Structure formats: structure tokens, C-alpha cells
Amino acid sequence: MDFKLMLTTFAMIFIAELGDKTQLATFAFSANNSSRLSVFLGAAGALVLTSLLAVVFGGVISRFVPENYMKMGAGVLFVILGLWMLLFPGDN
Image 1 (tube, rainbow, N blue to C red):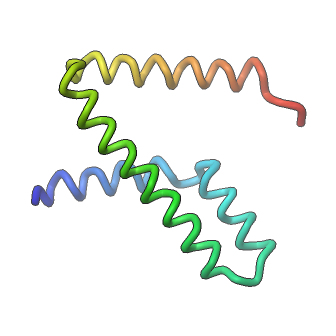
Image 2 (image 1 turned 135 degrees about the vertical axis):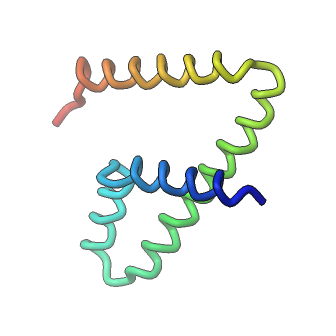
Image 3 (image 1 turned 90 degrees about the vertical axis):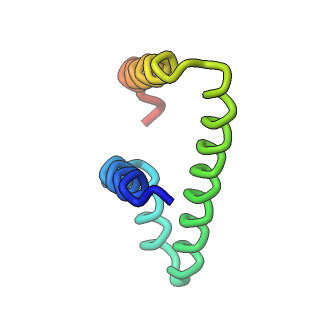
């Protein structure tokens, strides 16, 4: 096991998730429900499953698409989603 890679991944994901909509939604669920263990287990399970999907699909796609194209594609997708959120903020 590559511990440096594991710790780098942990740090990057931890920092990225702070203040994220996922964390805020979990905060709201916890505030509105008395079973905080259920909220924790549900949120943790969802994050583990989405991470598993990302690792599996990232491994498969990396066999066919060069890494630099994947990074550029992810960057473009983030910009598009950011613009979408700015231009179409929803009904609130």
C-alpha cells in the first residue's frame, strides 16, 4: 500500500469536502433528526459508495483515455458546472 498516496488523497478529499453541499446536507439532516448515528452511517455509506464508483470508473477509463485528457476533461466539467450554477441558480 502506498501510504503517501493514501494520505495525500485523504487530505485533498477532506479539504475539498469542508463546507461542501454534502457536508451541509448532512449537517441539516443531523439537526432535524434525533438519530444522529443513522445520519452518520447513511452519509458515510454514500460517500464510500461514490468514492468506490470513482475509483472503479477512473481505473477503467484510464485504460483508454490518457491522464492529461482526463484532467483537462474534469477541469472543463467543473467550469461548465460552475457556470451552470451561476447562470441557473434554481428556484430559490
